[in-house]
Length: 467
Ligand code: C2O
Ligand code: CU
Image 1 (tube, rainbow, N blue to C red):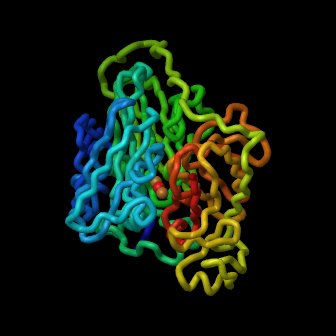
Image 2: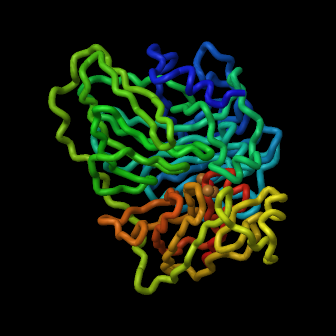
């Protein structure tokens, strides 16, 4: 198998004829039904066989769930797979028993069974949902979808688009490579694929009208691939990160969308009718075209960019008290080239080679998280401000996701951010030291883990207990 077959064979240019127009139909319907079921989809285009996937409602990404801020989400998960599953609502500050972590917040939903989720999302923004049972396999096979909570006062745009980005490891017949959770993926960068898709399509294009203003919601559903995107001649403004508003700024450097992260952009389509603007990824050594905007021939919608305001209303999140905060060091260790020799498994110091025999290679503060009922890394009473100092002592980036809360990113490598920003899945690069803080105001036992899903499966996780 040549893992790079797809990326290589398509070279630097996108397919010029779209075989489908991007677009996910919004569905304002409640209760939402999420049937977890096998399905087939043409990820790579009509010239290849369809790929057998696991999906919500037969499509990848699954049905977009979209409600207005303040509306309750009622969703029935109906499991038509042969494996147990759940739904986790990534980034939503919801009650613990709705968080969807099998074995921690609920029992896995068995084949043939159902589970009712019901909660009122407290924040507007761009989120997503996905399976939280063997996520490295189930999310890798397609069990995820977008989750949009609309602001009461969204910025005016001509179109509001979702790009749910994924990264598949396909064989040359477009079938999924079955090597989920391999030792190499666990101990290195995770399951990096060879077919990056946007809304379930490889190298499709999106048609735009010259002059139009688009809100573009980027969601990275990949198991392990991070993205660093540039938009040719366009000048996107960043208006939200991980669902939370930021003071808008024009991106002058590539836009990083780490695993599980979201970025909301406002883009004025300033190209000429009939032209094209490619979207290029350059996170890893070889850059490639992710997709392209293709302009219709129609005359521009407007000649000057719209002068409508683009800022979102500020987030309504509790501000941590930094002076009174409990400070916790979080040292990420292990993996290939990580130099870790010993760690604790079940409270016992062990040689890392013996731990690796059980498929585990990562640790936080010398502790390997091999199951969910480990002693919490952080155990606080409700309302406590917590400061995390995360240090990545490994050779790989780690997108660290905290369930049930958002964290304020305060500094990177000791340099304070000029404007701290809210995150729920910050990407911590090798050797980086990132300072974050949050108010632990949501009671329950919450996962805090690497969202490179093979890393989590190989021990990179911890618990935060709020009582
Ligand atoms: Cu997006 Cu623990 O999950
Ligand atoms: Cu990781």
